[in-house]
Length: 360
Image: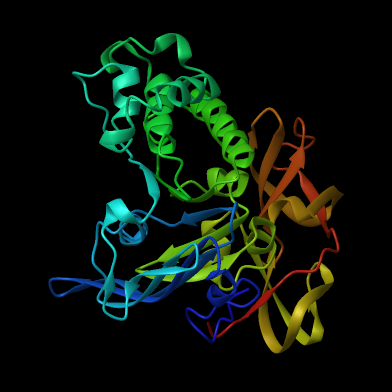
């Protein structure tokens, strides 16, 4: 996990650990005009893994992807692909020599070419005829073999996305870069295609770097997730570690619904209105303890009043107001058991969590 006091320093998934394979970005700075777009960015992806870059619009995600591809020059820092430095220290390998495939947000298909011709276009010119059999197998793999002679305009959004993916994979790149490739799809189709792409990437053992602003997408696809904000990587870790142990308040709220409960910490325990809560780190004095909504259970009682109830089918989300005026969220499985105005008690599940100094 990133140390909150050491911006950009990866521990556990160090950049230098993956220089021999996969993707390593080390202290990269990108200035465009007078604006600093990337500020001392370090990320890493092990060979065959999927790293998801997650962050709000305008935080620098796409610029970071373009620097890896070689489409955006760096101002400082180093980029390594499969153990080779491709950027930095007077090295700037052209995009066509980096052995990467890229799927763009708008898919960038050629409207005047057929599906087959679009996919073959991604191959070196001298190999296009020779590798036609491989391309047909790739079309079968992504589920569009029967569409080989169709034009992109006659395809659905999901089919066009598969064509773009097949074109990026046709040269058999070592690294695949994907820039929000599902953003134009409706919700149901996005879930279907996302699952298919994840399975395909695992089967091909290709290293992938995937950009998204969608937390659910990041957590379902990523072996590792790098959270970005304002041109910096704030934290890189496994999805479960980022959700359970975010490095700061902003990450906690960005990756999911979050409560903070005031308490007094001593060592690895904090005393709160919900009772003692175990911490994953040492803390002392007044703190705010992170509690996810699903970590609170409700029973009949008098600690809080139900203010709102939202039913989502698979679960229910309550907004509660405690007796001291604090507002908390609670998530429970299935249909709601309480209505607005009901009085309830709250219990914490006992999972280990993080705290933040109240001065932050």
